[in-house]
Image 1: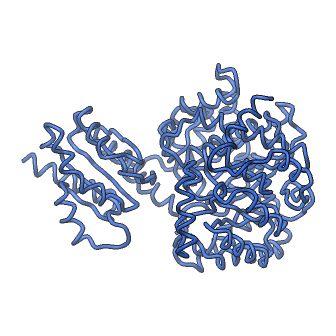
Image 2: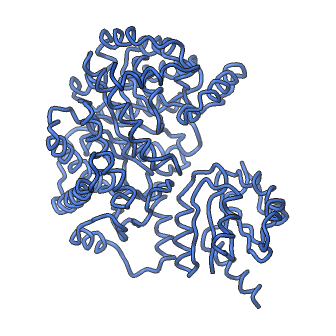
Image 3: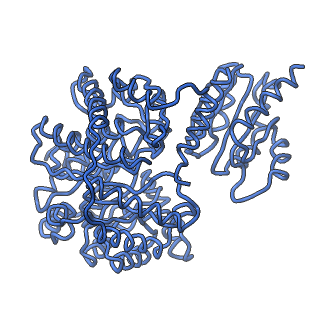
Length: 136
Length: 454
């Protein structure tokens, strides 16, 4: 399967992004890594260009929330993205918050999978489980 | 008028500069106190110089910080620049400075030097009469360093590679080389008037599992790019890597090879200094542990034989440090240096040989590039992955190299990408590591290896 990934917004934290690329690759995905400092349009353009099945957005500095609000209207401008699996992970709020409030909020923005301060392999396991369930 | 002077006049005549007086500035540098020149202190002092980090938005805050540092017996004062100025956004810096002054709240993460201007800043620098080091991270630092030197700041950190690859995703690298060429020339010209202006490279790079061979190659290349423009005082640097042995070997090899390559381009007369950064990776949140780590760094810096040490603070894990915490590190570090005596001379010949061979091989590949000038050879070598910096966010960087720590916490290369690590050295590096693991366990190891000091 093809995955487009990257860090959203003006966020330059690169370490986890590289490790995600390595891990996704090891799990057999074809990875298109847009790196840090990536805007929403770039993500969706890359999904269309590569025919990706999964979009995995990450964020560390917490600015993902601001960007996520714009996902639904933006995604609606693209055709044929209904089957795209949308996942977001990292540190999803500025300051502290708890996953119980954060997860439903992000699901409402249009994400199928939301990992707030979840470790990398647990997050990727949940992605695999989600895809397995969907393909049943 | 020379082309350089024409460019300087363009750079210095814009709305953000208040009438730059070239003749007056040259006269000021010519007659400036020797104490302001770190190159003078390097020559004269027989102890390691101690330099903290720090920059605040307002003149008043920066002045107060310097008072704390001087009380703590500082050797070199820092001037850290805010991020708007680093990105040449002087308009925003000006607005944020006004907000900081009016609201008694810091709206900038450093001192907006261009906005304050050289006439104001010079008053502060000459008042304290200590050498000041400019810390920034700017790809296009032309206006910034003109303002710095005019203010009495006679050490300029940075370089086209070390200030770009760790900090930027897509600022064009070729432009950075040309902008830094200007910086080198201006520093070289001012160096003729009094003591030399010292240039310092930023060796920590991403501070994330960068192997010593890559660090040293980049240090040597920035040194050569600087010396070939006429700079006569240069500091190579690196940061604590996690293994005392690897730090000592790195120090020995970088000193030896800096001399070797400087002589190769007929710049053997230049003074080359070694700077050591206390641990630049993730710090423990426990402030007492943080102090222990800082102390350990100071001991290693002494083992390495550094000419200057750049300090961290016990508040590193929690945000921008207070001036009190910052001054405390200076006093503590001076104390450790004062009581450290009779250090043993540690040599590991095998590690030195391996590292030396690696550096020579990469340097040779850079020199063999078909481009006509050194900066173009270096540019091409980064573009084609002969130089590859682990965890650089920049799009030009290859990211093919993979490094892990061995059992003694030395950083080892297990995937070399296009970097021409000689076969023998590569076999040696890999033989130190457990390669039977799958990628998932290697990724877990890397996460652990990055955070070893936490």
